[in-house]
Amino acid sequence: MALGAVAELLFRGLAEAGDVTPEGFVPWGTSPAVSFERILSELDRIPPGEERPGDVFWLNLHASGEERGRTARDGMPRASDHVSSCPEREVRGPMTSVELPWLRYEIASAVSQLADTRYQKERWLDPPVAPGQRRLELQTVIRWLVEDTSALEAPEELAGAMLYPDEVPALRALGKAFLPLVLRYEDASDHTYLADPSWPEVVAAAATARDCLEANGAPPVEV
Image (cartoon, rainbow, N blue to C red; front, side, top):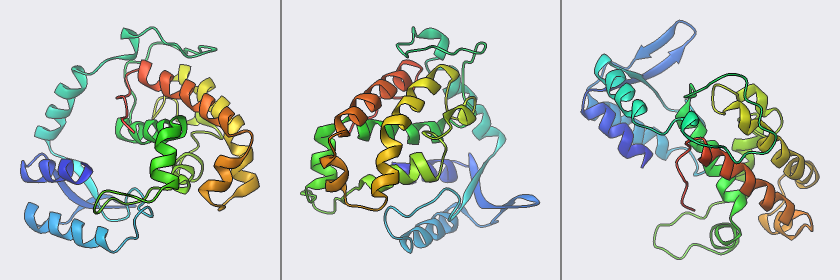
């Protein structure tokens, strides 16, 4: 889905691929077809699950892409349209959007995986059954929520960028339940994490955080 979105942006002339340097964005200057082939080729060299934002490329929106983005954003649900179910609401003024909605979706996806025991059994513990299906791992979720972002350790740092302020308590509660296991087990197997007696507390806290994210307009993540 992500590569399809990249292809759409490139081939419709809505964005260009390039690198980010200390001087700013530097476009590759190649055609959409050549740029997309380069993206596919370089991504193929990275082991599945080891991808990091910016490893291969960055996108810079053209004026037409920015206009399309504004139109899409204006049609999305706003935080003010929802009555949040988040506990300990901490609203610090009205917020109707976040700066990095695509990274917000990654947080929502990781939290949803922690909240779904069926998904955990089918995609973490059991081998994949569909041809070409890649087995997912809890360590990918840990990298995103603990190592690549401060979503669990200091979620307040992401308010305005990836989170709404009233979601901070729910993410902090999830961190309180989950981070001790990460410190205890580190790179242990998924079976080890899920066998811990406190794992149901992690699942319950993740379900509350997921509901908060969805109440504020995060797309429901099917897992």
